[in-house]
Image 1 (cartoon, helix red, strand yellow):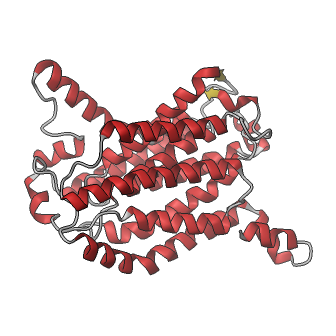
Image 2 (cartoon, rainbow, N blue to C red):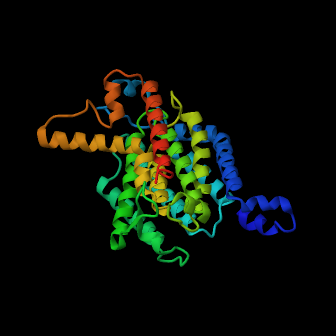
Length: 365
């Protein structure tokens, strides 16, 4: 909105030329989302607490400490994140950008799915929401639609590389996925959303790795969206993708604001409203900027959490034995006696290391 209003006035008022710089608008989006989170946070948490009464239902088969310590904590805190991101993005983004609208709408749509799931959990006081199969179908439909648009279906400015899969560590090397682009993109978006959802099990555990991943992807999006930078680094140039950095900056700001209330002991949980939305944002961004494989490295913590659940379920069904004391893996360490803050901070460290490894692939080619 600011870009459409003020950037055209740059010739008359030199100060407005700042709005032509993505870096300036990223900073503006971040600070706006942070400010909104701080202003609305207490009111929204109080409203959620009054509406939900007993708060988020806690898994009866979960760690014993959760049933006592976390009982009564309200959920759906993801609404605060979404509201901050939506307002900030609309204010600072270029609303003519196809890439921006795709990741924006995927995030909001996945957030709506998570909201309905959270609503059923709270209203029924049951940790199980609505049908997992139906939820998965909705996610696939949304992801497939997004990938169809990212394949250049409606935007002639999206070039032939749209259906390509970039290979890390190799200069200007990519595989044309053709008709397999949409199924592959769906796997990335849906997989990312549910991996973040599985990670969201301890106070502050998911939001910080999400912010780390967003900052990393924002840096990559800025580089691949500029021809000179992409040519120097040997990564495929994705015209127009740099605008996604505005959206990612808004998530970082909203995430910082949410962490203020989600830090141990949490005043509010993000719930599926936040975790599905944020995971969808990461997945759709990776597809848009053609760094799906790098996302698996940067978001390796989320991959680890998802794999731990898959291994646990497969092992129990095939052998009747469990590999972990409890899945996802962060609960395994709780069962081993690790304190919650210890697990959270160590997992944050892992997320930082993996993000640095992922970013290094830009230069190691």
